[in-house]
Each structure stands twice: as C-alpha cells, then as structure tokens.
Length: 250
Picture (cartoon, rainbow, N blue to C red):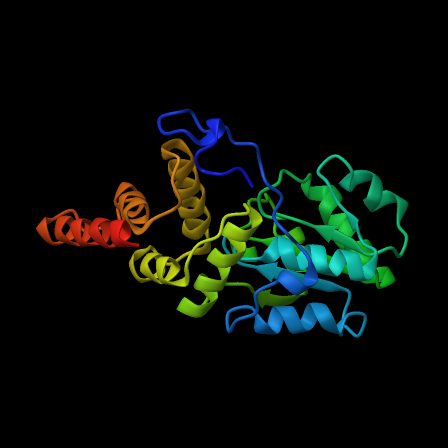
C-alpha cells in the first residue's frame, strides 16, 4: 500500500479513485441477528423446501454477498434483463439468481414465465429485492402473486457489533487499516444503516487520501457532520477540538 508521504498522497492533491473489489467470499459474510436465518437457509441448500427463495433488505445489507455465496455453491447462472426472456423460454434445471427483481428493469411477462418454469420444474431460483413484493413496480399482480410463494428472508444489519464488523470489512476491502476505537466513534454517531456505512467509508477514505493522512477521528467527525448527523453546535466543536488534540498526541 502506498505510504502517506508518497507523491500520490501529498496533501491537497486530487485523490484518484482506483477502485476496489469487495470480497464476497463465504467466510467474509458477517452473520448477525438481522440475517442469521437467511444465512442458514443459503447454507442449507440443496435441502430447500421449495425452489424459490427471496432475500429482502435495503441496499448494502448483504443480499448480493449471500447471493454470490449461494451461486458458487449451487453453480447458478445470473439472470440479466437482457437474458430473462431467453431463459424463460429455454427451460432447464440449472439454478438461477435474479438480483434486484424489484428495480433492475426486467420485462414483466418474461420474469413471470421464468418464475413459473422454476416452480413447475423445481428449478432452484434465488431472488433479491429491496422492497416488499406488494410494492414491486409491475403492472399486474400475476408476477407478484408468484413471488409471494417464495421462501422469504430479511437481510439487515441489526446491531452495533455487526455495523462495526461491516466497517472492518469495508475498510479491509480498500486495504485501509483503522483502529477499533475509531470505528466505535463512528458507529456511536452515524445514521444506522448499511448504506450509510458504505457512504461514510468512501468519504473518509477519499478525504484522507486528499490530505495525505491516515483516517483520524477528526476526519470521521468532519465527514459525519457533512452527512448531517453530527451535532452542529458548541458541544460538537468542543468534541472536535478534543479529538484533534488526542490525534496529535497519538
């Protein structure tokens, strides 16, 4: 990893987002109360009670990670908006993953026939969605009535421990080391959602790169305030000053 005093990390220089690849390895999935049943169901394959499974939860909650774990275990094919019609007509028994069934732009009739075929032939199919089936943006209730027959599992980040573990993974994916007390500082103040954890990680990493420093609590506090969750009052200013002094002592 590039050292902070290298040219790429000098203060004031534009930080280039070189990209990073999140790990979707099975061992890297963070199990908590909000996803334990979904995780157990994925690992129980092929002993499923029926062919259809639906994972439902907000963005960045771990649905895609679980889908990837299952796809590798089952040898599944990923369905895309451009392939759903062909797959619905060709049939077969190879397992399928349909990500973002509620918002990816799938053609309604083709997706309906695909789910029907999976149910008729016992073809294992895993769907993911952010919102309940009743709110899926389709014109008729035919597709939604079929999706309601799926074994449904919530996927959510449920507590401080799981949020903290999520930050460890997010920073690790970016090859950034942070101290546990910094993560505790963020978790205690942030809006409690996996989407916010992803946004905070990206912003803190970018700010640290632009300034040529490690990620400090002062950076974390500044990013939190930018996101509208820090207290914009005299007490917050006092906390920031105390944190800056402690960072300097460290």
